[in-house]
Amino acid sequence: MINNYTLFDVPPRWLLLRVETTDGLVGWGEPIVEGQRQAVKSAVQKLMDEYLVGSDPLRTEYHWQQMYRGGFYRGGPILLSALAGIDQALWDIKGKHFGEPVAHLLGGPVRDRIRLYHWISGDQIVDLNAEAAQSAENGFRAIKFNATGRLAQVDSVKKVSKATSDISSVFESVSDDIDIILDFHGRASRAMAPRLLEAVEPYEPLFVEEPLRPEYAHHLEELSSSTSIPLAAGERLYSRWDCRDIIESGAVEVIQPNISHAGGITEMVKIATLAETHDVSLSPICSVGPISFAASLQVDAAVQNFSIQEQTTVFDESTPYGRIVSNTDDFDVEDGYCTLPNRPGLGIKLDLEAITDLANDDATEWSTPTWEHDDGSLAEW
Image (cartoon, one colour):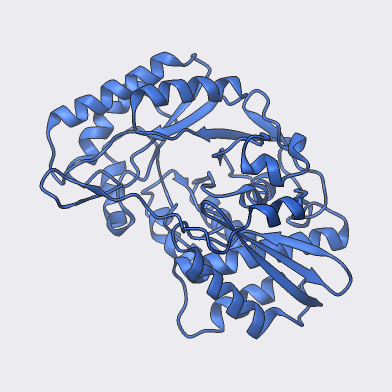
């Protein structure tokens, strides 16, 4: 039975959940919305205190349904992210209970290794070129970066030309065996997205992420029909119901749920199954910490339509990833892939002392950067 849990606020934007059972098993999860840590933390505490403590941790599907359907108001980033981290922890416990990786409990691995891409930060071209080179040196054979900076609702062709020039520079700075993924980051409007897609088409990116904001997902089908580039979306969608329309309409070729936002392992598998029925591939986002990444790998290993997994931070001792993860060697990247995790549960060993040292309840919460246009109006970040 579940008898205790602890939440750790880890700067700059992680929330780690440790769930304990009466027979000594421990499960870890990562329930977080970047910039909304306290709200998610409160939701986790409510679900744990009012429902899960004292229950059987192995009933993952039952608990998911109870936590989702038990309240009259459902869905959204806060509830689904709280649920996601709890679900990850329960699957971690279940895997350890049976002595198997979670992927084996999901039907067993369907591949021998997991393809990765590295998200490289920065909107300045000099930073992107340096980080692209570093990613290749770290073993990645695919990278993703933001394709454009601020864009007005209807903007100058010069902005498109500048974005194209920067993209060209990154393409030229990497070798031919490096695949490029472009992230429009929801910065382009319905007017500007077609222009950008046309401009980047000669570079043959692997796919373009979030060409429109999720509020305008009903226009994705129209946009998709105008380009040969595969389109991707789903980072700001939180359940199979949120993903259903863009999958069934053929609006995207790649669906990108985040396992710490979209209901956890239980829901990610269902999104993947829905996508498979429409020949849409799964490429999970991982914008937060190592538990989320480890949980994603378990699903990646077990679903047929997986294509490529995002990794934001390498497991290096100089990073918080490396400080809190004891089995960093299990996540080594070689020739663009990592091997399947073979430890029970999520396959990640965490250093509780290091997490406790890093945790800071009083830390200033990370917030989304705020951009403005030249006229002072809000710009999409």
